[in-house]
Amino acid sequence: MTRTTTGTGLVTREPRGEGTGRTLVLERWGTAAPAEIAAAGYERVLVEEPVRAGADLDEDLRLLRFLRGCTSHTLRLDWVLGGLPLVGPRDLHHLVPPARGVGDAVGCVAAWRDAYRYGAYYYRVGPGFVTVKDVRPGGESVHLTIDGESADQFRAIAGATSPADLDEAATEALADAVEFGLALRGADTVLVLPFRMRHWPVPYVAA
Image 1 (cartoon, rainbow, N blue to C red):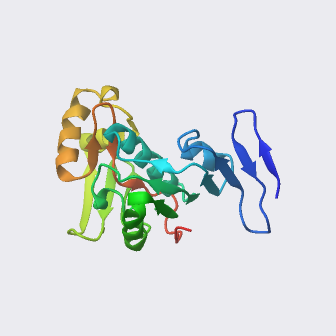
Image 2 (cartoon, rainbow, N blue to C red):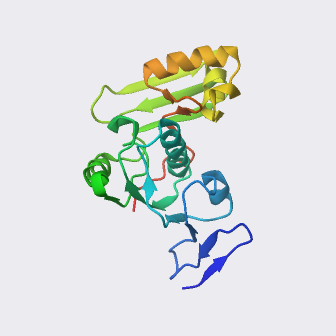
């Protein structure tokens, strides 16, 4: 198996056999955006260093954004969790889970992998509207259609990384989204929880 370091410091791993897909090896998560990884033709991502969570809410939300992007682009993600994220289980379990946990994250990862089902919490974008489906375990099923200016505000929140990115109308909508369980907000970070469904109805099971 050949490993090649690119000019950006990323390491690619050549496929071992026909149909295995191209694998991108990252020393640390977050050094490449999921959309860019998928656009480059990679199907799998291996994060070599364990991902440390639980020290800072904003950092945990940035991790969830990375996982949301990998889930949205159906990237096969191999990663290890260390520490307990500062969010509830239902805010995690619709996103691609860790392969394993270390330390106090072992139980969290076991529950996450057991609960994970692709498509449990996602949104789709149509002309002038957004639909949201939430069938995560532990709560009521929700099928929601957002249209008009509210759809524009949802898309603005979904594309934002910080509350500072939002105008006044979207900032007001963010408060409602957080209250409704559609989004989370830290001191410097905003995150829409459902991932965008891009590959419907492709079945997907986390490796």
